[in-house]
Image (cartoon, rainbow, N blue to C red):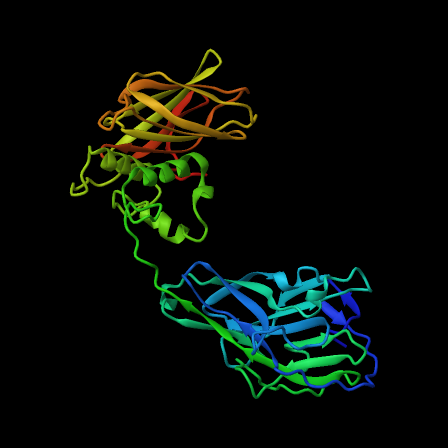
Length: 437
């Protein structure tokens, strides 16, 4: 029999097996009733919405429940708006409980609805192990944090997606005590609000437990909001676009990768990186344009030519145990970004061979080197029309691999980047991946 009173847990199945003892001492109904709530919150399409499951009382004091041994909740959510359950974590109110589990139900909560179901189970003490602190015998606050993946479908914007409680059998949304009376606290279906109660009854409740319908369940919802206004060039979201801080944040992306973005703000920050307005965020042409705007050598009122009308050819060659990066371009290049791979994982050294540019803070993680080559001044271009640009020394033998690259011409227009390869004595060229790997 599946239940919540302290007993034996089969962790593989996520099911609690209970051995009950007959109650002989009746308990009075707790007053005021304990209130179980799910948050009302908001999220954006493609984000992860956090909904907390909470326990508290109507009077704002600790719930007047006997010492608890476990609980089981059946949570229903909109299966169209939410594409999946990302995860469920135990809340701070039960951090010392010994068992916590969740699983998604395979069957729909009702025959003609778009709801999906999630079951959350927890047990305070398994096999008379170490007892938690006394406050966690009657936990107050957050019992669990539910993370739901919001669909990317833009049609859901403005929608209110339900996240609430469903009832099917006796143990759904119940809490049990560890006292001799074995009280089983159940929902009071005359209070609160429930999403679905089709076929609910208490026939299968344990005979050895005293039934006490004192839990008031209050369902929640998630409003899928319209994305906030995105200001082109305001990458750090400080309200001042196209400034030095915006430049440094976008520069760090090319040197350090996606870890520079704030997970909660990335949905606004990344679109704002389309500084040159060509419809492509996260390009080195955006970085070049931003650099020139706050430097005063470009104007936001300028009309930029279409991207990818010019090209840059990168020609790596081995000279005396070192690699020389030669370039050939159809026009002067104002900024170049490279991601270079070396499988040996040793330190890669870089030296600029020209006199009109500087290498901007190359960063290396393992065998991956990322670097930006740009002019020392706002109006300077690199000498790339036909020249040797960089000298690279790697610790190991073997070919140098350029994993990704982007280039820009003034004042911030993307170029096609190709790499020359020598295969069986024949030199061929291929267009290189422009995105950070």
